[in-house]
Image 1 (tube, helix red, strand yellow):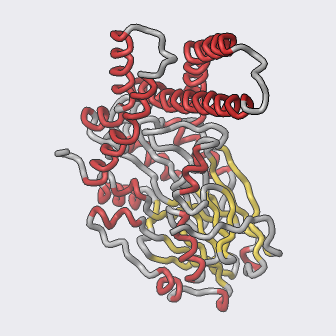
Image 2: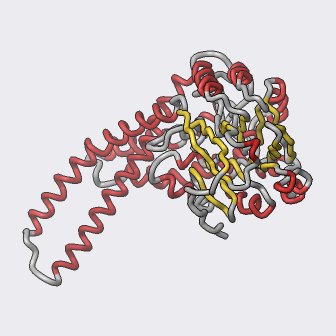
Image 3: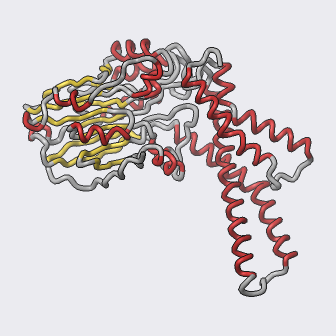
Length: 424
């Protein structure tokens, strides 16, 4: 597709291949009791809704963060997410009836049926018609609206304590604000940015870590309620911590105007560590902070390869009474980080799974590292739910956005589950 990078071409192709068959099945489902003309119109409408990302990318300059008004994007996403939920509900209903049918066959071999076949067929027809004509679509639309409202809500402050037996005494009580997956884009407003920054600063962190996917689209693209993404990132220049604000890149950093955004981050007080480390002093102790570039940069011609073991070897460690914090957008790198000698890894990328049920699929593709605390080969890993969401699927159900506030305390390490082994 001319005008799109390879990454966006592949993403558009995935939308066409993966989502067209389910909607075709819904449109031809026997639940829809209507004439063929209405069925054809419904199939066409579902096709348009299912391809809203491809349409927006063609008409509004970007797939990751289109330059379009929120009042137009939100109804599109409401219908799109409702369609996905409707397909899931219809699929569950089909599985229920299939299981029930198999159960009836098995029972019929053991004893005669309690009801006549005609009565069973009548009850099944009434139930399926009621579910398909009213309940399932209404439930899908309602859940979609609620999920979207939660997806664009101001993130909560999630306070946690990490105990470490080897923590230098000077870092006892050290506070880290971890923000990730902000995704400044068409659904971001200046008010949302101001409230997010205010909640972060009110916690009075000693260090602020931003672990990638801060922005979508170009700086001059519009945001919700008026203004541009440049104005939104300037609101994040108000983030304040005694030791500073540091970041690493995520995959979305490379999709739109990477050099321009890197320059703007620096101008607004956000120091991006590109496979580099920084030694910070705090009450006579040291924090060795490392930021890793996301591997997506390699697809766009950027040199993002680095040996994190060699990188950490050049920084002070436990012998020098330093605590090593590694920022990496993707949690699946934690196994390599633990082997390299990191004391803590902060990651995002998964958005916490966004919705109950969908988090199982997200976990499958991220070595079961989806949200919360894990211990990987003795190293603590925290995977944040994220501050915002990519505008392509900004829905949360049961997994709220968060500003993670981690307080380091000296003491026995407890309360973190073991991470499962990486899958090949």
